[in-house]
Length: 236
Image (tube, rainbow, N blue to C red; front, side, top):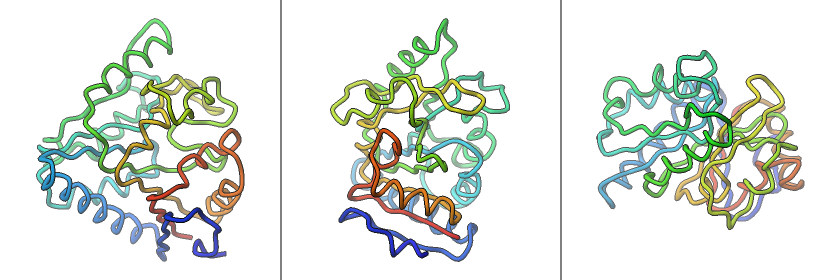
């Protein structure tokens, strides 16, 4: 099955690539092009990326592309509630693969906060995100269970986090795998991005996307983002 065969909402576009390296290269060029347009229009650009190992190839391409990164603000769509020194920290991953070379000139807003509880950490991250300019480019991934960012099915707070009219920017969430405790941007904040992009690979992810397209947000949270002007990048 090709991604072009999916029944997606009007305004959602798809691109298929023969390999993961070609997808990462094309996605990086698209991201930088949109950031450049934002800088030219408003003098600043904001990029929100997802954590985990999947975006590493994208990061490695981004650091090679020319851009005035000093005018870019970068943050994460979600974070594991572990110290930055921890092997599972998304911020640590960004500092290793993305916030290097010229990209190190960008302003980075991390989500992790040391606090007495996960809820207090999420509230502190929420306050930090108040300084975030309007999001220009958002790069999301998707899990086999239909989650995106750290908006997991059956997680406490999922209903509130998926509220399209919600005013809170960051929520404490629980993942089914270790580390369980996560911090995630809300749907309302993520959906405010001018240029949302979804990157997935493999037939399994395509099958999940097909299920999500005809499913509901409670069981397939990524369904909340399958709307115009989303661009989906996929490779087998």
